Length: 338
Image (cartoon, rainbow, N blue to C red; front, side, top):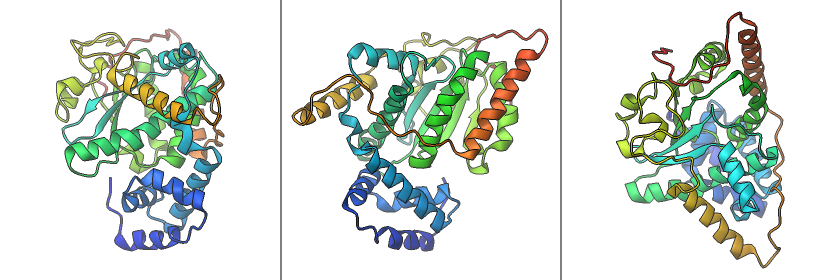
């Protein structure tokens, strides 16, 4: 993840020590979970070790958290339960296990997520809740279990089912990506892309040069479902279900004995839901639970995110206009070497 100089950390620490507002200090504690220096290092890496820029980034993040009550987001159930199920079925995220080094393995069904069954605010709420649960529950428990500080994860992005209709999802994905870039920087060591169809390969070719070198180095496009490569860093039972079956078209429901980590009955989702339910019941005395999303102020997308979104849209339109191109959602990109 890159080593940050002690001098930069010391300068940054002295600036943060000047914060006097209690709400900002409290939310910073929720971010660092007892590891303030490592947290400062993450923000420094995200701003190329420029102390002034990292300081502004962290202050903006703290203010965003206070203004949007992010510290309380794990007390806000998405209700009724049918709505919660709908969000989960159309925003496919799961925790499939841990790498041999103890890093949580988060799986994303990019190609099969539709994001069209609920308001954008519910998807944003759900995404932030998973981020906060990862940072406040999953990572601290991995740190305890593996006996060393763990504050990052691995992400595996399944492109199975990715189609031209992905155009309609670009807006919400840009919003979510901006929230992560601004408020949860440097939380991912590697992004593994699997089951990549032609439409992904075409878009990746034009997007790759737009990414910062730091991000580009973290992305690995694997052949097929990526099983053999991923088994070098994790055990079989930590593989997401969509990485356990070779050949084309690994689907959401395939997976030789490994359970579907997107499913509501998966242990991760059971634990997440029960945790939020328990936290909500502790706060019930203050106000009754009612239907309605926990509205987080949606940030203006970062200029880089906007450029990437426009480039993807342009490439998809180009593909649409090509003679003989069919909107095929088949996964398994064969031997895509990038």
